[in-house]
Length: 428
Ligand SMILES: O=P(O)(O)OC[C@H]1O[C@H](O)[C@H](O)[C@@H](O)[C@@H]1O
Image (cartoon, rainbow, N blue to C red; front, side, top):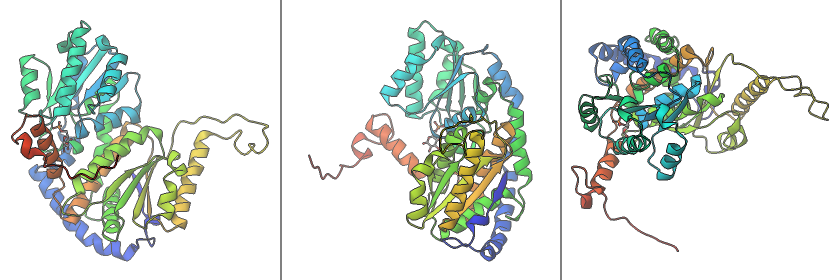
C-alpha cells in the first residue's frame, strides 16, 4: 500500500509537515503500546496478528464439503457481513455472492425469490451469536430452504463465538462450525473465519490475501514516515483535531464500493467515542465527482477526502468515432478516462485547499486487498491510540441493540424501559 500525504499538508484545516514531525514522537509511543498489546493478545489488538494466527487450511477444509455451489449467501450484519461483501465485490467471483444483513421484509422476500436455494451455501456469521437481525434472517432462510425441499443442514456453515443462540442451534443440528477469532471485534475480523470462507468458496487465494496483510504488518514501525498505514492514521487524527471532522472515502474502482462501507463501520464504530471521532462519508469515483464533489470543494472546511485506486487494472478501449467533438475520447480507453478523472479530482480538491490523501495498491487482487484492509485496520488502531479512545468497544451501538430486544420482549430490559416516550411535533 502506498500513501501520498502531499495534498493533506498546508490545506484547510491546516496541517504542516512540522506538526506531523512533532506528532511522530507520539506515534513512536503508540506503536510501542500497540506492539506490546499485540504480544499480549489483548482484546482488539490481537486482530493485527490475524495474518499470523488464522489457519487458512482449516477454512479451506471447512468449505470443501460444499461441492461446487452456484451461490453463497452470507447471513450476518455489521462486521459479520461487510468483510464478506468487500472481498467478494473486490475480487469478483463466478459464484453469485449475496449478503443478507438488513431485515427489510421486501428485500428479504425478493432475495429468497431469486436464490437457487438447492444450490446455495449459507454462511451464518455472528460473533455474539445473539444478534436479532442475523438470527431472524437465518430462521427465515432455513425455512425457505425446508419449504423448497432442501436439506438446509447440508447447506449451512456457521461462524460464531464460544456461546450464544447460534452456537446452540449449530450444536442441535450438528452444523459445521468455525470459531470467530479470539480478541477481534467483527469490524477487525475480515481476515479470519468471518469473511475468508466466502472468499475460499469463491475460489480466491486466501493465502495471498494474508500475505498482503502480512506485508503491511511488517511495515509497521515507530515512525509514520516509514509505515504507510500509520502515515494515514496519524494524518487523519491530526486533521480531525484541526477541524476535519469528516473523512470522505472515495475509491476510484467500482469493485471497492463495499470497501468504503466496510471502512465506514471500522472508522465510525472504533473512533466515535468521548465526543471525538471522524465521520466517514462514502463516495465513489468517478460517479460522485458528479454529485458530492461540489460539497467537498465548496462546502464547510471540515473535510478530508481519501482517494484510493489501483496502479494497474484491466482496461476497455473506447471505439474510434467521427462524432464531432468526441475525437478526444475515441481510440482511448475507459481506464485512461478514469485516470484523468482521478487526477482532475485530486487537483481540483488541492486547488480549493481541501486536504486529500492518495492511497494506492498495485492491483485489486488478493494481495492488494489484503494490504488495503490490514492497512486501514492498523491506521484505525493508531488513530485510536493517539485519540485515547477505546477503539475496540462499541457501547453506544450495544445500547440500541438491547433496547430493540427489550421492545420485542426478548432481553434483559423491560419493553417499557427500553425506549422512553418519544417527543412529538407532528405536522400532517
Ligand atoms: O457478530 P455479531 O455479534 O452478530 O455482531 C454484529 C454487529 O453487531 C453490533 O451492531 C456490533 O456493534 C457490531 O460491531 C457487530 O459487527
